[in-house]
Length: 320
Image 1: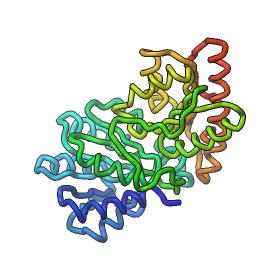
Image 2: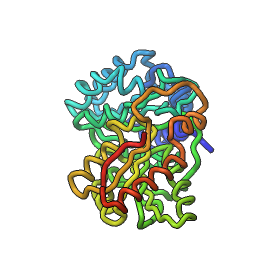
Image 3: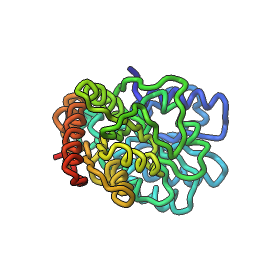
């Protein structure tokens, strides 16, 4: 298994050999974000800003006015919280062509602990007008997403990741900004997942199938603009939805899906994610089990929404 951050660094080097329109800005964490390989290969296109994320965002805004595409790289917790004012006012408001690419997401950060576990970044960037949000499910999808992100005019926030993740796709994977992807078809319920939770959703669906429960699995690798059509179609065809994310259940994928569902086709729904609390330091898999972000938690959520569906309640609830 490879990490998403390493795949990001590899993709940067490959793209830099083909195009000269972008530079990479770093906040003294090139080893942590995977950009060290780009720094070594293209030092003249690597700008070290030091541990000053707010200034780095402002520098990127200025560079974008000169026709350069700046790729800002740092940890998600700092990209979304320390530098949020600059991201909002210096990038989003003027619609500058800056790409913010952040690693260290959710409790998958593991040993770095709660100060570095970004469990709010999706909620924050979803609330900023003009920003698009991308969160690939594996290294192959990340490599396909990056050139699309670079070719998309305007601000984009993209998530990578610290820990190794299983490969779901291959080099033929297709990425279209704003489109979710159906990874498995089903008729009883839909599991909509993002990032590291996608492979867990697939594992849950496989086990549920053995129990006679058929689940559609959707990879929602674009969180904004979210694919409303696939959400509505899933609600209509399966009548029950479970969302799965390594993020606070407030403001993230679950909230985004619920907004679509409640306006268009209310169905039984449950959210699997961090239940509005801080986690602790530990190994990623152990933390996923402790805080209910594993495949068995997704299985249980599916069974709950199926019971709701059977009773015809169609309530939106969170996994507690």
